[in-house]
Image (tube, rainbow, N blue to C red; front, top):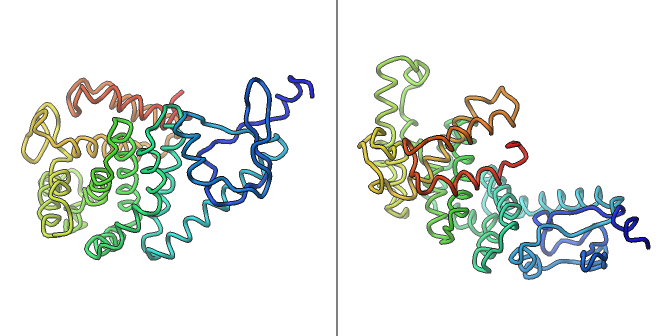
Length: 328
């Protein structure tokens, strides 16, 4: 086959979309020495070890015939849905939204970090994030009860908590954080960061220009942390991150006006993610690309006000990678 014709016949298919232990919907090829070589046939399986190997070597895509790209997309979607259903069956229907968000995060991380060579430890961590991470989380009865209460705050609040969790874990890993306990505690802190707002009467929350609203907002990190500290199964750092998520690097945050390195590193990741998602929410009526550009620029040009200026460049690069489809 003519090389030009051969190349024109193939399309890229992202490694991150391949689900281990699920049959391939079409033949899959490698591109080696300017030639396309069949690697697996339709119906074959790719195991976890092989997918992890490709990702650890920075391989972002395998190749399929362009006429088969649609089959691969459908197969990937079906496998993804099956993975979600299997996990939901184990952890319970009430945790479905968390399961879906964590699966989404895992795939985004695979996409982004495939551009860099990952250590085998980090690849294994990513592989387990969508299932083991959530199973462990929801088996803790205290946390399961909190998730129920978060659902009671409404869909918008729950969605914000999950978005903040995903963004925070993402930028922490992009910053080199690979400890599973740290990442799990960070995600829990993100889920609970606005827990102090639960008992604020709705009439106060709705009157954003009132003095009572301002005081309630100033107090919610401390109130949330106070409640989190009553949950003995949670690490102490979770409450610290909840309490400090509105502190600013320049000392003008609240509730304690902490400065610089006095702000816990977990709270710093949470703070970036919280502000990022808040900007997206405030601009939800704008096109997505405009909202993401605005959010990234707000963080990029912070100049040490809210965020640690030493951490900022890597965080901004990670956000641009993650939301590269919008940031152009």
